[in-house]
Length: 81
Image (cartoon, rainbow, N blue to C red; front, side):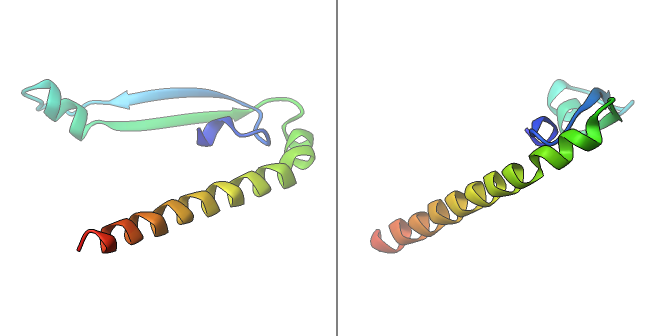
């Protein structure tokens, strides 16, 4: 999701590096490393300027919602005692 915000305009390539000494799929998945290579596309600067405030507002809403859910979870945990 981080690479798909409205203020971004780039091509994205993802690479996965797997350890050479993996013995099973679980270890392979646990020890793999992800590399993201992004290249700005034409017009990226203007798209960022045009959408920056909207994206910041959305991030703040998401942060507030997450904080509210955490507070509710803590309250629910306290009620179960």
